[in-house]
Amino acid sequence: MPKATVDSLVAPKSPLDAPALDDKQLCFSYEIARGEMGVLSFEPYKSLILPFWAFRTVPIAQKSAAALWSIFESYVDRGDLVGADMTRKFIQMGMTRAKRYANHKGGRKYGADGKQLGKWTEEDVDGKRKEKEEASEIFKGYWRRCLASERYIRLKEEWLKAKKEYCETQSV
Image 1 (cartoon, helix red, strand yellow):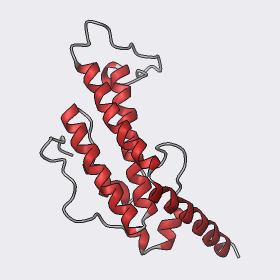
Image 2 (cartoon, one colour):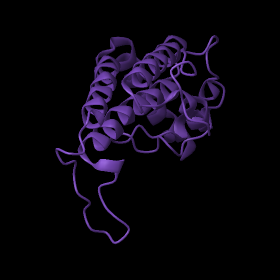
Image 3 (tube, helix red, strand yellow):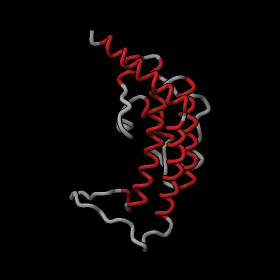
Image 4 (spheres, one colour):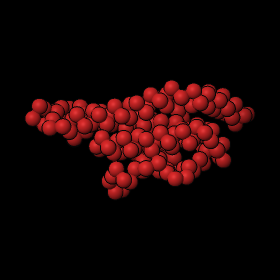
């Protein structure tokens, strides 16, 4: 996949597909789970949303977070909890991954031998660590907006109730 640039990260002109709206099995096979769990494995949403996720620089993080927020709102508007929650997970992952790069040079906590790798030293900083912290904060602001969205909260409650009913009818 080519590296994201500031110019390549714009919100889609038309809404992304919402396959869970037409497929109850897909819709209710989704797990909200904790944090970002499943974000890189739940298809087709992963492939739809992933191209808009990047955090390498502050301008890229700003464009990516804004594009993801637009996608999130589009899914909420259409009543697609799966799409909205997957987008929320990508926004959260932007925050956590950028923070990991801010805390660990190269973004890795552990080496191939399983030993913890060193953190940034003062000589390494030269703005890179600060840039990743700023990128993390950008995503954090959008992540908080997702969690505070009353429409998202209501949609999530409705979806949880519908999933419970669906699962009960499937086990009969």
